[in-house]
Amino acid sequence: MKNFIFSFSILFGILFLGGLETQYAVAQNTDTEQTYLAQADHGAVDQAAAHGETVTEAGEEDHHTAPLWLVIPFVALLLMIATGPLFYEHFWHKNYPKIAVGFALLVVFYYLFILGNVHAPVHAMAEYIQFIALLASLYIASGGILIDIDKKATPLANVTLLIIGALISNLIGTTGASMLLIRPFIRLNKGNVQAYHIIFFIFMVSNVGGSLTPIGDPPLFLGFLKGIPFFWTLEHNWPAWIFALTALAIAFYFIDKKIGRANDDSELEETNYTNKFSLIGVKNFGWLFIIICSVFLDPNVIEGVPAIVYDGQKFSYIREIIMLSVAFLSYRFADQRAIKGNEFNFEPIREVAFIFVGIFGTMMPALELVGAFAKSPEGAAMITHNTLYWGTGILSGFLDNAPTYLNFLAAAMASKGASIGNIEEVRQFAADGYHDSAFELMAIAIASVFFGAMTYIGNGPNFMVKSIAEQNGVKMPSFFGYIIRFSLPILLPLLILVWLVFFAFVEV
Image 1 (cartoon, one colour):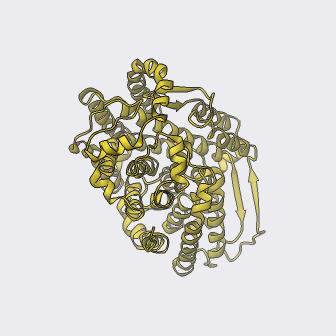
Image 2 (tube, rainbow, N blue to C red):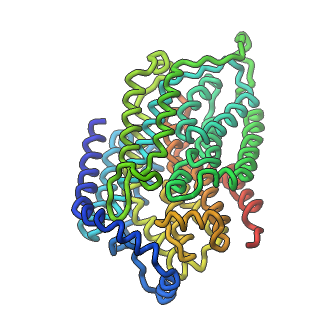
């Protein structure tokens, strides 16, 4: 943990202090720039784009783009995440923090000192801080809540708990629901829990379940901060949500019934169940409530919230301070019976923190190259709700789904002459103010959430659930094993069905 804090401090210092020299000037000119943007002629923008000219929005610098080869550190990191635990486990578990931070610093230094681009690293760091503050606070606060279910583990009981988790994920986020229920789910199945139990938990609770509210999943929350109405996701995503969850629940039920040992009485015949559940650490629900409330303290949504202004954009820090303070206080004053009963420790969040330092640091060139193509005349011509579904989805599986969502939303809006930096234009886009725009947004939103379950790194909770399961003795598949054994034969056909039912044959 000391190594993480030291490395994090160095990286944050480089990025944050590197941007301070332009902060004051940008802050002074913000009002003037906003006035200019409000009066901008969209016809002129379209005309410039038609001639292949670059239109630079106010508040942005003319940043140099990354070369294609700079995606190599990102690809190398993904390969090591995939192969490390399988082929060189001891080396990987001992050195993954150094490897992840090292790859991140390599890319960041290239941006800072070769490209002279401070903009991209600062934005990546801001997104990482928001990401890890939310995940860490939810993980630690939920670790002080012990739920014990005294019930026989049947396929129906397991499915019921998974569906309850999917519903809860819309109230406290996929991270909060995952951390709250993964340990009770494992205890419910006691010594009979197998890898497929955990994988379906990741599918249903850690990803697909959180599709209905901005709180549910990080991509949807980022969209809310950009201006998408709070209830937009509920209004547009619920049919696909019900369809996907129903399909997954049915698939799990028959798999659990056929190959699981949850209904095997050979070891449990003498056990008497009360069919009741106990709850220890109720006060930690209060800490979770504070975390969820703090989510909305964003200076881009609420005027007057203190912010760090850089490159024409406001970055939140009050929200993150609250979340990290809650993390400390919720652990400091947690019921020790819950902490011991959950066998709580910091290793899962430590692993996520380091792995995603590497991912956020190295994925900048990949996102930049994809976004640049999507915004080009050639790329814009290819943008439809179908290509957005598959493009957003595939990249959400192998990049973190939150920045992927923003990148494709920005590209979709740019193809129609709109800007993701303009809240009113984002609201118009969500309200179908541009041709096919609401449907395109629906494709982006559903794909980013659903495809986040394709790999361990598609969404933050996936890695934590895997780590907790392994600490409880569950033999989890490797990175490629997860994809080959579960994502391709189970999840991918469902994602194809979702596309066929809701997108493929829709004419707009």
